[in-house]
Each structure stands twice: as C-alpha cells, then as structure tokens.
Image (cartoon, rainbow, N blue to C red; front, top):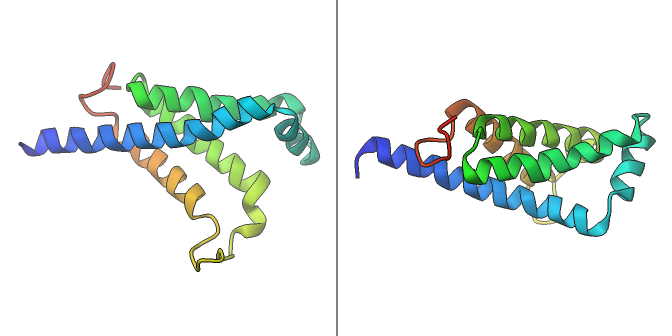
Length: 131
C-alpha cells in the first residue's frame, strides 16, 4: 500500500471513530431530553436556546465526519462543542486525576484534539467531497 493511501485510510479511521463516539453522546441527549442541558446553559447565565447547540456538535458534526461531507466543518463543530463542554461542565476537573490515575478530562481532550487534527488534516480521499 502506498503512503498516500495509508494517510487517507488513517484519516478515514480517525473520522469515523471520532464521529461515531461523539454521536453516541448526542444520541443519549436526544433520548434523555434537552432539559438538563438547557438548565445547565441557563445556570451559566447564557440563553437556554444555546443548549441546542450540543445537537449541532454531537449529531450534525459527527454525521459530517462519518460520511466525509465538509468534514473540516464537522470537525470544527465537534471541537467547539468540546470547548463548551469543558468550560460549562468540566472546568472544575481540569487539574484532577480520575480513580484510575488518568487525567479526569482525557476523553474530552482526546475528542477535542482529534477534532482539531481532522480540521487541519482534512478528510482524505475516502470521503464524500474531500473537503
């Protein structure tokens, strides 16, 4: 396999994995309702309707990643969603370790950094529109 194909396959694996894993979080929010998210957003002094932005970052963005349609935009949506999640929910855990000794925000960090990497790298040729 030539290096270009290897790079494109790596981008495909990263895109699909990140998209599906983040989408599971969005699906859980759809199933459980948005009241908790809206309340959290309002508790931080922001308008409640901004809570629906989580669906953009955890449903629309991941779909864009999985199919590779405007995947850079989808990656940015996921990254922005993760920044909001860290700021609104996880800021108090920033310097903490979890019970297993890992960083308390390792999942959020992995989602954020993977999304930034995809925004910079692009989707590769195994995507709907290679953008």
